[in-house]
Image 1 (cartoon, rainbow, N blue to C red):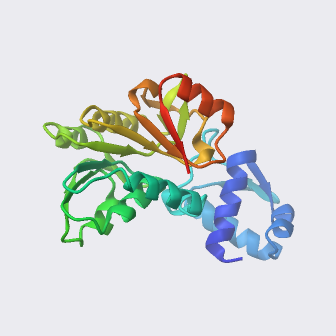
Image 2: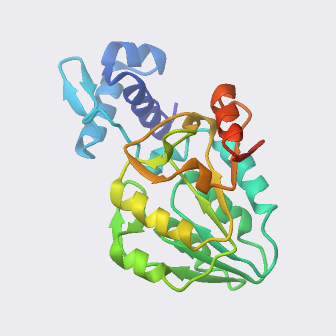
Length: 252
């Protein structure tokens, strides 16, 4: 297994259980205990875990993977979601994109379109689209967050004032009929809410692991969303609750 895949697998297990054991990881990932210990040391230097005798623990109860590791998870599902989202975009539209791996896939699906205006607060999306002469790219200012590469805060929100978006594709860490759309960081949540306020149509792009989940900070109510595009593995009860609340759900 490649090192990046091992690191992702370790963080996945921390995300679900809060602790990991070197011996168990070595067996599950077909690696030597020495290799696993080096991997844990790498992640500890990045402040993603704290090493313990024989293993490691997550730094926080609410655990958030950095974007560079999130991209490995549900990669095929995210590409299908992005393709379906891109099909709803017509030439000449103004499109808003928040950060996140699924929104990044939407950006890639739109990269070859003509006469599109893209407004984003995501540095990684801006770096990919900035070299495209067919795309009019507008990037907000704001405070950069290393976990998600998003620019957020008052400067980002001021950048959105006066703009009118035909559609905004919003990435989330959780979507639940009662709790609404949520993410891990409150400033980021508020900036995303401002983008939503300036969009004629709001579409959530989220893989099935986010459906029925609740993160720390609320972006908006579920009723503020026009459509959710997710994959077919989404929890049926959570999807039903969203559709009962008036959200159109597209499964891909």
